[in-house]
Image (cartoon, rainbow, N blue to C red; front, side, top):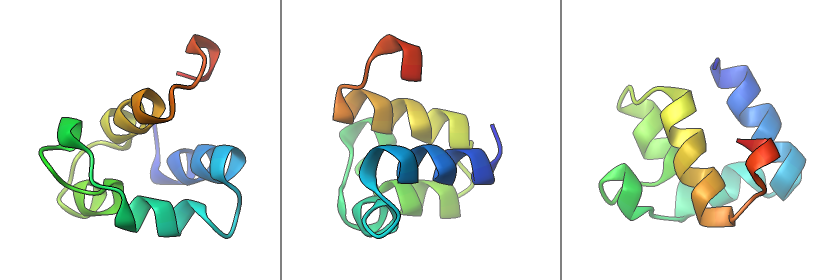
Length: 64
């Protein structure tokens, strides 16, 4: 998964205006206590970050 696809999915589920805010404020234990944005900035693969977001948002399996 590329960063563009990650952000596209985030915007689809959280809205254009809120996706980046959410990603910079919500700390996920599955990302070692980092926000999605911090994890991406640290070099974590977007697919791994998406899985953590997917789990936190309790999205359907079809969105994984």
